[in-house]
Image 1 (cartoon, rainbow, N blue to C red):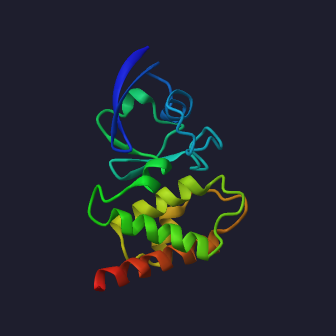
Image 2: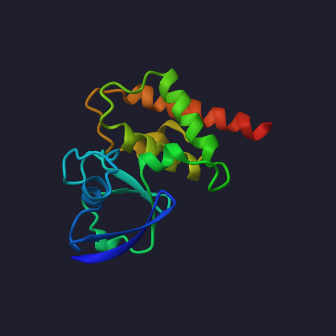
Length: 167
């Protein structure tokens, strides 16, 4: 066991864990942050997606010893954000609103990974094309098959954010 100093959802935390323990299990089992889901355990479904310094990562295959000083954002931290960086709240709000208006969630299991991936996409590309969305969301498995609604929601969130920029 080793001690790791982590920045999770803007909070400094120290955890004691085996160096090869996947970040997913540190989050879920040690810290009680259960929003990131265990889906496949082999980085194929992306239900366990978290953001490391704003980049989507599958936490089921990322050892805690490989996290380093990266800032980790989980779905819990994303939905609780209040302007830690310019534009964050607008992006989160846009995704939440359009996700609801388009009836994206069905069973909900994949939603943390889908939403975090959408957030990262819109932060780096506020005007994505269908191809951009498909590429970014590739690998995010939705067993309910809401892919068309997800794409529509991403487009609506992007437009919602663009309207906010014009005000």
